[in-house]
Image 1 (tube, helix red, strand yellow):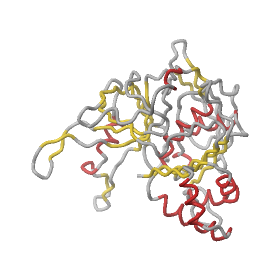
Image 2 (image 1 turned 90 degrees about the vertical axis):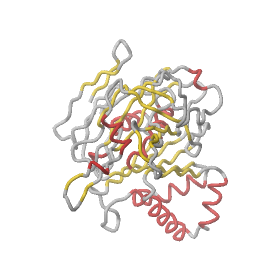
Image 3 (image 1 turned 45 degrees about the horizontal axis):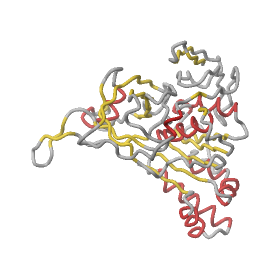
Length: 360
């Protein structure tokens, strides 16, 4: 796959796939890449024409206080859909879209924050009164500069929510996710009501020497895409990243990986500063022969992960809340095997603001 900037600054897409490609990769944004995908075990970095050329950005967005709840459901911001792009392959277990919203920079945010989206239409409350729908929160998948690096757009990563009725052996449209379907079906120019930004838990620390261990399932990848673009893609003079970023990503299969082309280029360009490990539950097995879930993949590197945490690394968890019981059980098991005081160890991480969890 090759992405190029046109003279107007817009991205043009040209896709080509090697015969041995693991799946027909979907064209994505932000880089000039020639991708030659191989079978996923540990994904192979693609051939690239040159290392990432960092993008110049409007540095005034580095100034000022953290924006927080600038817009509310009663007084929402109105943006416009710029593009909607399916970013998973045909064998993915669901549909996930990358959605770019034109904001003109009027609803600023920082990496790790979320927007609320108010779906159109109204609902009837318990008293029979018509009222607007509530806002649904989505982690922002771009940096404050947006995919075009000008501060005029913001991006979301949205999985279309559907409901399968086992009795009818068919999807029940009456029970589909209202907001996710609105977003995935949106057309360029459609208006979108937004609230926020909100959130402080997943804010990217300002220390350029920090170590970041990022654990995601599904669309929980969104804030980490923002992190990685800020760390490796954008040219911010006062933020020259010299630390380590390590991403663990859990999805069902290789067709369900998100933004893999972008991550592979970062991996190729910064092999000493970026690590990437996938847990593909329907394609890989864990050490016991069972399905490979995200906690199993992290456990494979438990010694390194714990050493990094003891040295001050930050660890982040984002995705479905169902991921956390397995994560907690794994961490408890590792603590026991290492004879570590679990309560004291994780209490210290939280006290030092190294522990960041945002699940839904």
